[in-house]
Image (tube, rainbow, N blue to C red):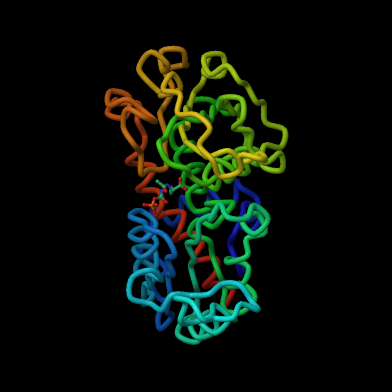
Length: 317
Ligand code: AN0
Ligand code: CP
């Protein structure tokens, strides 16, 4: 595997899960693989988990790790070609990317949807420029349309906790005061559609996701109905995808917050969320603190997903 941006890059999921299991049980077995190899992590947006877990994954593999926050200390980057650069941007991404590539062996990129232009977001213009111009393998640390390291960690977590061969997994929209990207729900849908589970998506009317990610999943507008018999409840907010509301918050209906009453409709489901989460908007205190809450082991598995991916990339160098 050279680049990792979506579920197809990792190969058959049963094999990917077996590799992840090995990495989790033997975190330091491949220290020689990363010797004298440098991982550069480039952040256009904030992060707690991705930053720490991916760094830890690189260190476990014996790599040197450097981190660049584009918006803190680096030059402001122009990302469009053809612009007369007489504004506040000091450098063009077309120089910055190959320069960054010259200092490392593998690059991770975090670059959220900007919600300025749907086509640019859904064409992944930033991530794809890194792939095209860095000369290095590139992996997504959440790009405009997907967050594959998160989805892989989610799948690992479900695999570790499922009580039946084909669990019912329900992804529910939940309210949030600010516009959030569709990357996490798109990606989770992509991975669940590829995995062996009964996958249901529930959200209020107007929050329909890109049909390319929804695939064959059941979409249920009645949250209570969707939650019936669920084994896993995966909560996430996202802003509208469909035009003319792309990137907008169209409601913050708190009747969609995941509460103890909502969880009572399920098959004693586990609660999942990628974090960071706003309590009592997305999920009530008592649900996130309950024994059924997997948010901490789910976040811990981010080291496992990142290390499994980085290992595959190192093996391909
Ligand atoms: C981001 C999002 O919803 O995509 C990152 C989640 C991993 N969340 C926020 O910006 C709060
Ligand atoms: N879940 C996740 O990617 O968290 P961060 O935004 O803190 O990296």
